[in-house]
Image (tube, rainbow, N blue to C red; front, side):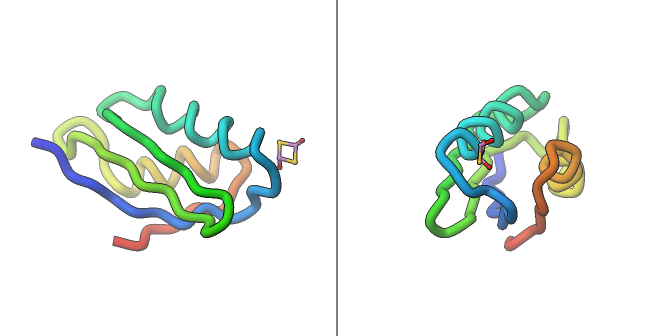
Length: 72
Ligand code: 9UX
């Protein structure tokens, strides 16, 4: 199964931040696709809910030093 979650990611101020967050998300087990936009502070993550949860994705964003929260 695959779900798409949308997250707000606070604290990104440059393109390197975006690359960093995308890399972190893409390296998580169960994440198939991750796209992060600097202008909107939004990230869209396609993931397998049998492998990783929305909360775990938020925690990974927080552990990377950004403020993550779930949109839907
Ligand atoms: Mo550079 Mo972006 O140190 O927050 S990666 S500003």
